[in-house]
Length: 162
Ligand SMILES: [Cu+2]
Image (cartoon, rainbow, N blue to C red; front, side):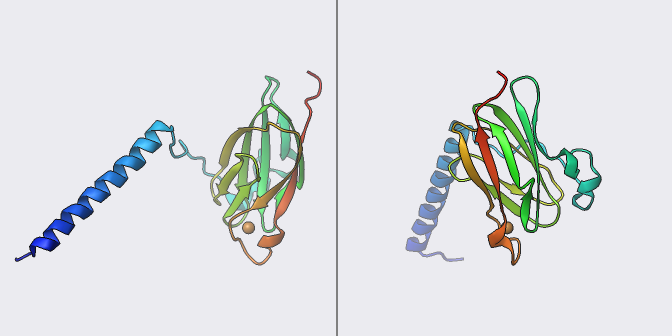
């Protein structure tokens, strides 16, 4: 098979560029300690209300008693539940979210609290809110006709009792 000299040259240029790009991405990911979430936790989205953790009465913020907290939420067309949540400022919080139906995205502007909520899995984010105030929790994955109205409130308040 005959390959033209110019074509051969450009094949090598392409291979060289690919190696450089993969190298840069790998170095950046390793250097910045970026990695995909470790482990995954399956959950039956159709039976969330029967699970202990994601039952309606158990949603919301809980103090773990060791200076940290856990926030449990459910995303369902078209809202996040509970619709208003209060969490303390400067406290490491583990946020656990499950979807009751389709794919949702959970995003709080001006914080690092953002995650995809894939039905069938528990999404977990660890964060510490640095500033008090009212934040909007919104869905950033198109999930249906009511997607535009899918949001809830997050109030970051001063710590109490410590
Ligand atoms: Cu949505």
